[in-house]
Image 1 (cartoon, rainbow, N blue to C red):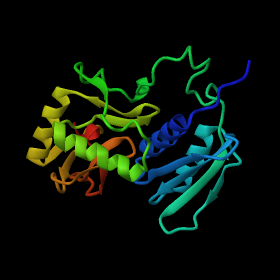
Image 2 (spheres, rainbow, N blue to C red):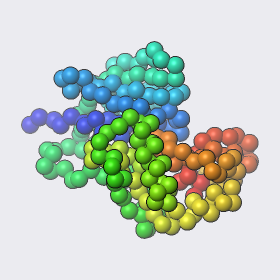
Image 3 (cartoon, rainbow, N blue to C red):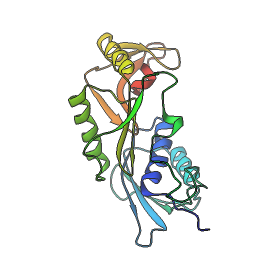
Image 4 (cartoon, one colour):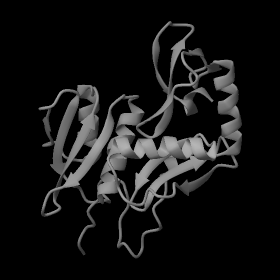
Length: 222
């Protein structure tokens, strides 16, 4: 029985998860397979630490990953597309697989019981990461939702939304401060400036206790 290769959407999902887990400001600009479909090239935009690049190599299971950076603020990764079961994405035939969905470990049902997953209309055709982020922002303005998490899958950009979460986000942004997931208090620098990074909607904030300013996902502050 032949092993199923990860889809390009699954490759992007794995890389974005590593970036998100490491609170990395870099974004996935594109993921393109080579002609025979055995290898792919991932373009990252922004600054990426060496430890994060090592994490990506471990996540996709290819220690021979080729890393290059010919353009300013842009890094290219070239690696072998692994089998889906070896990368922990799933196994079996396409017919046996359930419809694409946000991975369970990225969901927030345990925090917001009313959360649900939907696909942003008009995102079925894959675009550059920058264009997809613009689609997410436009959808947010149109619907008034603040996605708890969003991710590109084969059938479009999936978002997890919750009315309870929306109310909490509005309250935090109005007050301009919040208690983070680490129990510390944070001052939001510019509540009107929220933006998508990785798989989260983010804002810049400063820890009142340590004075350290950084980019944080709204889900960390709510």
